[in-house]
Image 1 (cartoon, rainbow, N blue to C red):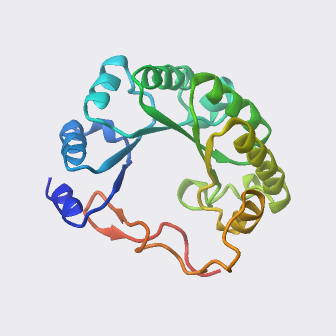
Image 2: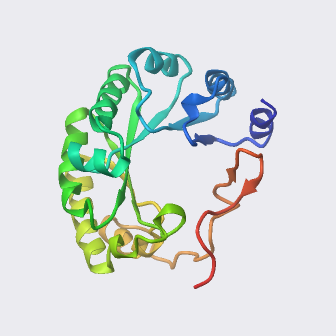
Length: 227
């Protein structure tokens, strides 16, 4: 809990708890409760498979601000991508439990050539479930994705997707985070209105956010440097 005390001392406003699977920690509810008691907003990013009604109620008692779970497309495609049969249905049931508990839910998805055509279905499904926040990011060729270059979307397809997302945000009043796609910022500012002066181009890592590894090392960014 020393890390929690340090975050409180630094007046960190939001803590994003990820993994691995954070719900596997025996002290996760103690961590969440301690953060909430000190006025820190908490976002729990999990795989969604452990969100039973009992666990969701415990998260509610910990005043979790947002629960973030992954969905990658229709049931068969999602299960194929995750390698876990029935994972789509289990995650959807977890989302329903969170919404019924009055908790905010964010659905995360990684866009690639495999699920690009299914993004509209995914967004409609989430709206049907009462989800009002989406995190949609590009494929970064690191780790197990090093060999998936062919699945990475070209700029033209990303622009077509951005057009759909802009329309969705304007019509449905939902929140969409485009993740590690800073190159899309000028287009989105044009669509929604924004500062007339040029934006600063410096990286926000270490200033707007910082990551703490399981070994308590501070990591300012997770993207590769250089060309």
